[in-house]
Length: 68
Image (cartoon, rainbow, N blue to C red; front, side, top):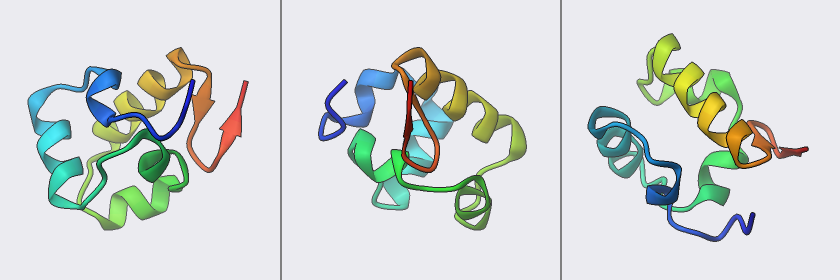
């Protein structure tokens, strides 16, 4: 998956999508480079971070720039 794509491709729920946009995270790459602790600092809950991680894994990516 190309990481310069819009985050809407990851099909997040409205709450996560709005929080991502509020934190200027608009592309998959913006999200992919972050660590869990950085997401926590930006106001994401543990369950939201888990959902983000799952959606990235479904696309062959993981937080902190790992690929599968």
